[in-house]
Amino acid sequence: MANDLLSSESTPGATNAAAYSVSELAGALKRTLETTYDHVRLRGEISKVTRHASGHVYLTIKDDKAAIDGVIWKGNVSRLQAQPEHGLEVIVTGKITTFPASSKYQIVIEAMEVAGIGALLAQLDRLKKKLHGEGLFDPARKKPLPYAPRTIGVITSPTGAVIRDILHRIRDRWPCRVIVWPVIVQGDAAAPQVIGALRGFHADPTIPRPDVIIVARGGGSVEDLWAFNSEDLARAVAASTIPVISAVGHETDTTLIDYVSDRRAPTPTGAAEMATPVLGELRAFTADLERRRQGTMARLLETRRERVALLARTLPKPLDLIHTAQQRLDFVAHRLDGGLRQNLNLHQTAYARLSGRFAPALLEREVQLKQTHLGQLAARLGLAVGRRVTLATSHARLPELTNRMSEALNRTVRRSGERLPELTRRLDEAFTRDLRQRHERLQRLEQLRVSLNPDRPLDLGFARVNRPDGVLIKSPAGVANGDALVLTFKGDQTLDVIAGAGGTPPAKAPPKPASTRPKTAGPGQGSLF
Image 1 (cartoon, helix red, strand yellow):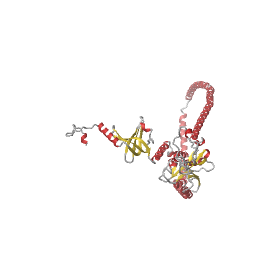
Image 2 (cartoon, rainbow, N blue to C red):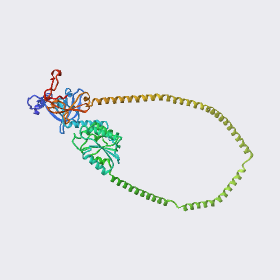
Image 3 (cartoon, rainbow, N blue to C red):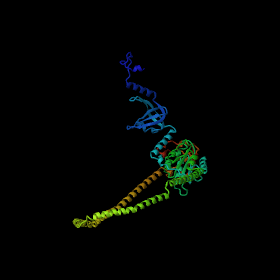
Image 4 (cartoon, one colour):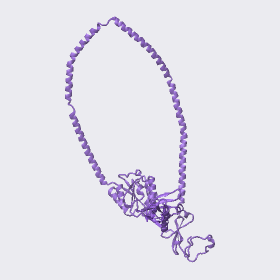
């Protein structure tokens, strides 16, 4: 087959079959793939999602052994059941085709849906990335645990083995006060109750403030532990000023609060061990420290004693110092008498020699020289006095200059004082403006909270229809004749009714109910309203 694609000009003895061009071969392969695989359902994990400026989406779908490129045309992106995101496990429907420019095959995706538990894990992964980007997983912001806590707060279910294991372990290791805040640990109401417990430990003045908080729950499936993957709960744990230890599930279970808590324990018993020291070990440790302190002091005293003894041996004896000085004094005193006599003889000889040289003429000449020198000094003294007078005149202006400088400084201080009220006024206006903006934002949030209240329609005259076991009735298609129903009105007022005969009401009411609705109900048929 390879020989059929070679030109007859390049291969001697080849057949006269026509050679394919690259475009012809690419087109033939494209038609073959699109005809054979015109409808394919494919399951895999999305990666490398690229949204082009034209509106098309390019991505890769992979499993543990292979990968295939995919494309979603602009017109199909908005109609997808699930939007493509990196790491999301999906089931896609489309057809296999080729991209001739690069000789690659790809799938043109027409429909996309989430595949099972992968959606929850993908949602959790996106939330992890969001909180990690905000710095909530940063180890630098985690608080250290107290070494010897006086009060420990435990947030968990009041029943079950978890609370018993924690209390038993704390009692054995470090007897201290334990405050248990009971909550449910599974379901939609679990996360709000745990958040309320965390805030209660911080704000409730009727209970002692704990030194450390343990959030604990036993093991379970991903769905059972999903309440501890709540974003609100993760932010509440991160905002706690009290160190928090998370002990949710077994060692292999990981939830979102494990990343934002200050410490993560593999089990609830491990959390109790992290929060408390061992009293017996602490006593043994302090006894060992005391023994080591005494030994260290004894060794230090012995070392200092030996050093003083060595230094004392190196010093000379006091009597030896005195004897040497006394001998030197005796030697000098013996030589002093002869030296004084010899010095006296030398001075007498020098005096006799110099006295013959002095005459009256020599003395007069010396007096004239001194007088000349004295005149020169008098002239220099006059000049110096003149300079001193000039300098004194300059010093007389010093008080004036001092006064001028003081006045300039006072003017500067006065101008600064005049600006102070203006600056104070501007600061007050800025604070008032910021406070008003925050108040307006709080009002908007309160309006949003009221509008999202699920019980608000009850205030407008509507009623909620449930079965006696609490199951919500969303459509009359699920109600049979004779079923017991409970109507809930405003203020949690309820009314028990029985569904009557007459079949399931139509899915869509007619345009004019007044003209088509029967005036009276059939026998045995009750009314839901």
